[in-house]
Amino acid sequence: MNRLRWGMIGGGEGSQIGPAHRLGAGLDGLFTFAAGALDHRADAGIAYGRSLGLGDRAYGSWQEMLAAEAARDDRVDLVTVATPNATHFEITRAFLEAGFHVLCEKPMTMSVEEGEIIVETARRTGRICAVNYGYSGYSLVRHMRAMVARGDLGRVRLVKADFAHGHHADAGDADNPRVRWRYDPAQAGVSAQFADCGIHALHMASFVTGQEVTKLSADIVSCIPSRTLEDDAMVDFRMDGGTVGRLWTSSIALGRQHGLAIEVFGETGGLRWSQEQPNQLYHMPLGGRLQVIERGEADLSPEADRTSRVTVGHAEGMPLAFANIYKDLAEAITATKEGRAIDPAADLYPRAEDGLRSMAAVAAVAESGRNDGAWRDARPPMFR
Ligand code: NAI
Image (cartoon, rainbow, N blue to C red; front, side, top):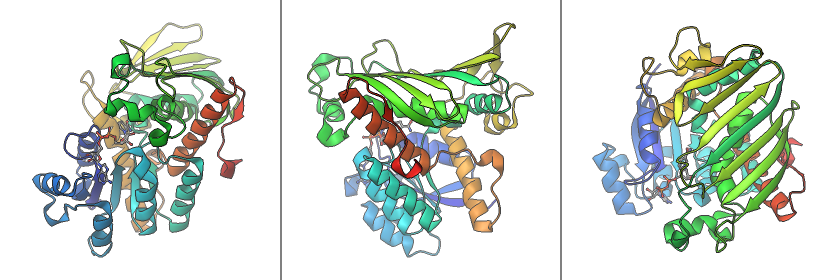
C-alpha cells in the first residue's frame, strides 16, 4: 500500500485531541502528516505546523489550506477535522465538496438538518466521510461486536451504556469560561452532556449490537442549577432488532474519571467492557462461569486480531484505538483509488450516517427531556 497524505484542521498545540490523532494516523506508516491548519490563531498554527515538519503546508486557516491543497497534484488524501463542534459542519462540507475524504470529530454537526446535508454531500461526491467514534476502534470492542454477530450471546435482550465523569462537578467552576460555554445553548446547541459524551455511549451500543436506535425517552437535569443545559441524563431506548437500551451520562459524577462502559445481555450470555480497563472483556455464558478475555490472546476473532497492536498483557489505549480507525480509512481510501472492494474486516469505521443518527438522538433527547420523558422517534427523517 502506498503511503497516503494526511492533513488536520484544529488539534493545535495544547489541544486535547490533536496528539491522539497524530499518534493514531502515524502508527502504521500508512499516512504521512503532510498539511495542517492547526490553530484558530494563524501565526500559532503555522509555527506549530512547521515545528511538526509541515513546512510551507502549515497554513494559517482552513480556507487557505483548502485552496492550496485543492490546487496540488499531491494533495492530501484525508483531512481530519478536530476543531470545536460548531465549526465541523462548514469545514467538513467544504472539504467533501472539494473532493477530499474527511474524518470529522464528533459531534459531526450541530443539528439534524446539517447532518443530513453532510450525508447527502458525501454520497453525492462519493467521498468517505467518517466520524471519530474512536472508542469503537478498541480491539475488544471489535471482538464484542464479532461475538454478538456470530451469535455467542443468542438474541440480545438488553444493552447498557454509561459515559459518566465528574470533571464539571465543581459548582464554583460553573462560571469558568472554559466550562460555561458547554452548558450555554447559544454555543453548545440543544444538549450539553448527552451531545458531548452520551453519543459515544449510544454509538457504542449500536456498534456492538449491530442495531440502530429507533426511539427514546430521556430524563435530563442540570444538577448545577445555574446551567441551562443538562449535566446529567438517563436515557431509555429501543433498537430495531428488539433490544432494550439503557444509557446514563453525567459530568458531575465525582470519582468517575472517563467512565465509558458497555454491557450486553443476551439469551445465552453477557459481556462487560470498560474503556479504563480496555484489555479485559468479561464474558458470562449462561450456566457457565465468568471468564476474562484478554486482548491479544490467541483465538480471538479476526476483527480483534486485526486491531490488537501490542503484545498480550501490555496496556493499549485511546490513540491506538484511533489508529484502528485510521487503518480502516487507509484501506477504504486505497480501495476507492484502486476501484476495488474494501476488505470487509476494515469496513467498520463510523460513517457520516452514524454522525447523523447521533444528531437525531440528541434532538430527541432534548425534546423528550422537555416533555417529561415522552418517547420520541430517534431516527433521522431521511432514514424513516
Ligand atoms: P481544544 O479546545 O482542546 O482544541 C481545539 C483546537 O482547535 C485548538 O488547537 C484551536 O486553536 C483549534 N481551532 C479552533 N478553531 C479553529 C479553526 N477555525 N481553524 C483551525 N483550528 C481551529 O478542543 P478538543 O478538546 O481537542 O476538541 C476538539 C474536537 O474534538 C471537539 O469537537 C470535541 O468534541 C472532539 N473530541 C473528541 C473526542 C473523541 O473521543 N472522539 C475526545 C475529545 C474531544
